[in-house]
Amino acid sequence: MSQQVVLTTSSHLEGYRVIEHVDIVSSECVFGMNVLKDMFAGFRDFFGGRNKSSQNALRDARIACLDELRTEAAQMGANAVIGIDLDYSEISGGGKSMLFLVATGTAVKVRRA
Image (cartoon, rainbow, N blue to C red; front, side, top):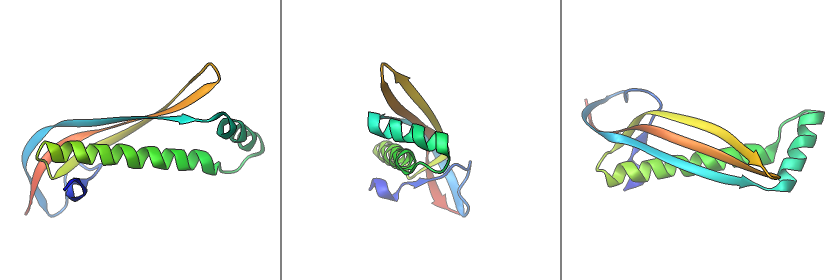
């Protein structure tokens, strides 16, 4: 059921009409980045180029957060989430690094226009 929830960063869905604003939904995900990934990211930063492990971690965090957002909206009876905002942060200290992602949006019920 939650896979049927439509997600968009836009304030509307083309071809649909918002019939009810249900509530604000949010999802918070924290992912640990291990020391080796951090070390290789440092080498990549120094020598240049793309860092695949960091890109994969960012993609995985985004997918997990949006899946949670979809599930929360479905549990509220919504069939779409509009105005989605994704905020990424890095938390580091004590030799550890964490990727923090917050996804927020407005859960709504929509109907084809």
